[in-house]
Length: 262
Image (cartoon, rainbow, N blue to C red; front, top):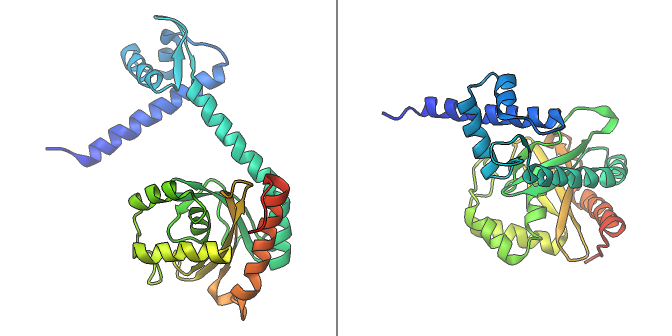
């Protein structure tokens, strides 16, 4: 009988072994022989060889020659470059987030699209308050967040259709959009208004407004948002806050990506 718990445990163990091997190769700073890798990792050579062969087949490690030593592969370089690009984006956007948090006195966020999720790159809170703080690197569903809708709305049509074909509209609150037709309408509204809204769709006590950072080609490279507990919503919050977010987003787009106002 298939044991799902054992299968997950085995998978986790294999992932841990792979990460340990990559970490060791990264710290070594030079190619390492199979025998030395197995010794340092305290694994049998046969296990180490199978793991390295699997990593090599995906480009994460490479062998200098048949029977030779191992080193990090080209795939790791690509991942590092991707991380560097996101770090560069976060650094470039920091002054605009600081400006926005001063103007709205609420938590502000910077995020990018990560397949069907949004990945947070930065989060600033007013007066160092931890209210609604989201740690950089966190991923949340794109379908029920203002950031996600702001980013999805500006995808090329073919790419958007591919995303929508795989999108699972999971229910988080009574306000969560669960109809694909309604979700499409929400994305059209984003294009019309220039910003997206999360009206307690992900958390029942949180509201959010987000605007995309549009580059010169018309694509959203990132999005910024303002988040607030619904208990602190002032009168006409969306009407007053949305133009501020859009203005800062457009300023960042012009300065950093050659974007233009729609």
